[in-house]
Every structure is written in C-alpha cells, then in structure tokens.
Length: 61
Image 1: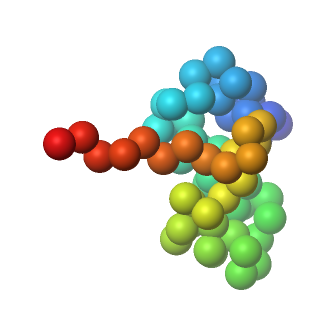
Image 2: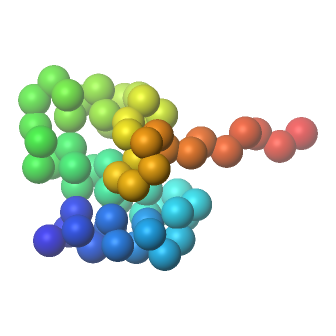
C-alpha cells in the first residue's frame, strides 16, 4: 500500500525529493536483498516507476 501511495504521489509531483525518497525506501523494504541495498546506495540507477529512469536534476551554478 505504501509503494502504491508513493507511486500515485509521484504521478502528481514527479520532482518531489521527499516522495522519491519514500518510494525508494518502500521499494527496498518490499524487495529486500542485494538489489535493495544497491537501490539505497545508487538511486540514480533506478528505473522511475513510470518514465524509464529517475530524473536527477543537474546542480545549479
């Protein structure tokens, strides 16, 4: 249920870092194992739940 909630919220606000962090943690908790640890360590490698890859905005400056 938590993962579905975060997925729906990311549909509405795809750039919210708090929602993205929640989605990553919820998915890691449900998946478990080595893949979950990698997900927490390197979230930029994760597929976005709806768009192929997670958008990581470039640093300003």
